Image (cartoon, rainbow, N blue to C red; front, side, top):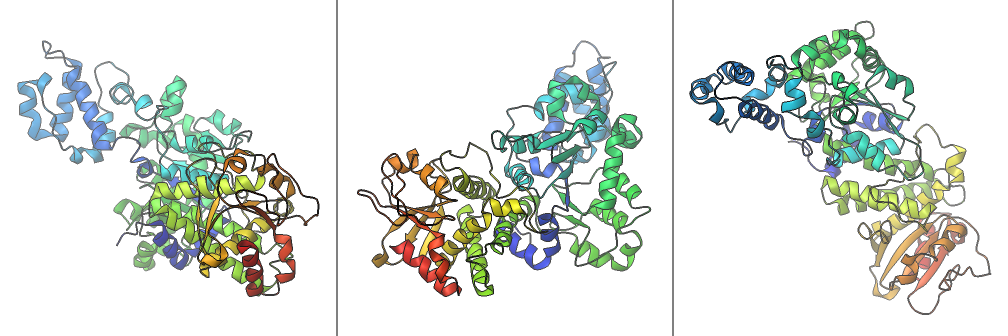
Length: 570
């Protein structure tokens, strides 16, 4: 059975493909991305072929039997739709296209190579298909898979990807989700010059060209690979040499994750073959070098595996083909990877908080609390891929934004990373300076309380003023009702939030959990007279509690959670 939910996907990956999660968390896997991730954003191949056939038919001049469009369309019908030929010849200009063109989809590259009189060789691609608008229009918007790839980029665990997709949706998702003021995060590499000038941390190699770039810069037209001839000669064309050498290097030296029916074109298989001639990948069932986000291995993917593992393939064929398909498509895989990476970063950071998470008992308990936060996010996503993007971007990322900069709402579509580098190889001084371990402790405590049934949690996703705000509903009427919970880094951020519209216009109860800083006796007032640690004001409840007040309760997870619960219920 194909796995369809992100929660199930995450469970399967953790149980059966932990090496993939570990590789990605270290930033060591490269993605090879095919057309499947853009299936909801651009037309399917059959629809594109219908567009080509309609273009040729509508361009026929009925009075001219030697019309170049007539001759081109006749050749296509004769070869790929022979049963339609007589009907077409009776009335070419009114010929009705078959409703089902699925039998033509495997021949799209040959059909696009059909010559039309003296027109340019790419006439059907450029004019009939109108590739620059069909795939490169700025009105196309990224789908959830593109946004999830962007999240992995911003979290610093994805630095290279190869795609045969003409659309510009991966790079648009990365750019649209980049925080204001941050440097360019993605370099699109197609031409030799782009390899020289591309300096962004994430490099996207577009093996078959880019329609979005060709739309605004005609020099990119010659880099669009679509026809059988283009694919066959690709690796020998001087203009593609930089791409050819880079793809060989990636296939030889980095483990791969194939998404969206990737590596179906013969030119990519050829690069893998040449890369593994002198350095094949050994088969390791616990650490497969090449994994496909597919329910099962297709014949083309089987060929790729034979090339990857060479002599190891025949004796291990059944195991290789079984273990190399993840049992799910790219959407659940990407959703699970994004959830895992974010929660894993917080889990790793916990171990570097010296005053609350220093014992193994407390550390283990807080880790379980972060898993409860993960469960909260998955529950709110409601088995929907767009929902996963929302809980990560409008939820968790907005929470991180409030932690560091509560006076400014997260911009639309932007994603603020927990930390923009992998943490699995160790936590550097910057992570400690940013007090990410203390953020992890605060979330862990909230998660433990939810897991023990003291309260329920969900995270604001809609109104920008409420994004990233946790809604805590106490399960006992004796300890109060609902509170909105904001986690701030220190007194600067706590005072800053009291100057926001969220604070001044909100009629509900607000609890600020301040991760660092010591209590002080002088109250810090915002615009409306908000008070400091533990103090209340008239009107809607406004309270601030500091994690520093729990330092004397960190002997065990039970005493720590009891102390935290007392402050939450106060």
